[in-house]
Length: 400
Image 1 (tube, rainbow, N blue to C red):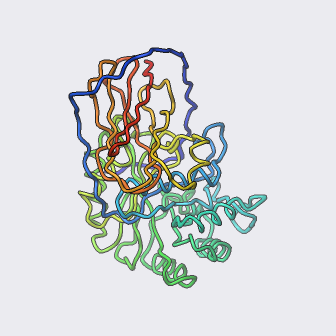
Image 2 (tube, rainbow, N blue to C red; image 1 turned 135 degrees about the vertical axis):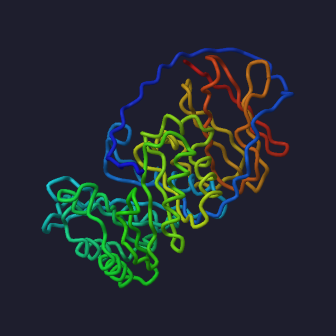
Image 3 (cartoon, rainbow, N blue to C red; image 1 turned 180 degrees about the vertical axis):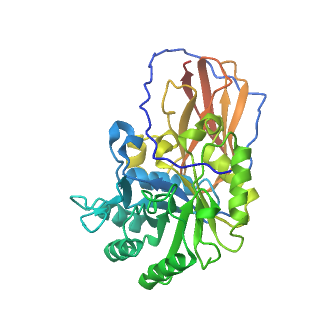
């Protein structure tokens, strides 16, 4: 049993702001609950999927380079020794056999954009060391043509590390859930990709192993984009099945679909918590990518924070949570100027510790953590960061 991937439209969310003021002498806590695991990593790449499906983003506006750098670095910092990466869509299937590329080019079943929508982003990713897989949704367009056109145009970028094909949209007008890939096609496509750079990698993506080449494996990365799971345990179960079909190859996963939000929104740090479960369960795990359809729920578009992302981290900082007031999740951002053991704890008005959000060693950098207050009632709460002698506390409002 597998689950179908769809282009997903996200609805805007309204926040009701009621401003309260309470002056309180903070009480030192005595009880702390829910310690956090260390989450050491054997996942090489961690990052995001990005597409020009603009309904995924606030005000239907595709985010700028700063935001995607912020997300890539934020995801990779959740997993020790992982590099920031992206599945960057350069064509989207539009029906009637046609795919629209995000740059000027016309050919059979390939629709053009008026301008190049990728170049400035790739230049920034070059400078930031973000590893980019350029992905297409081919429709009835010739895949060899797409590989040639895309890699000739963008192959000079140091950030580009490979090319990907979403098989669900391969000749989708004529084949339900896409055309199954043959051994000959997979081998030819991989050879063509590597003809541009022998270090490039090809990925093939679907939610069912039946759509992958029957026997040819080469060095292909196989990506599962299944969704509509009822729990994290069910996700792990099906993702393990995927990995066992390709035991000698690298496998990666797209996570964070809105259809799964009913359970992942309850996790303290959804990306990290899901990632740690998969790391423990899947020995050939290579990459984890949070999808664009819900990315701003995990990495809110806080303009001040994003614009300061690359500034040197000189001091410990604890930012005001965003959004605030919130219901039931909010994001807390903080800066670490040197390798330190970081502890962030949530308290109630009486100073009782309710939840430990962070309890581990952190390297220099900017970080985010998500707090889910699903089990708490409306009211005022505090969160405190402690790093050695540095302590800072801020107030937040949960509004049901």
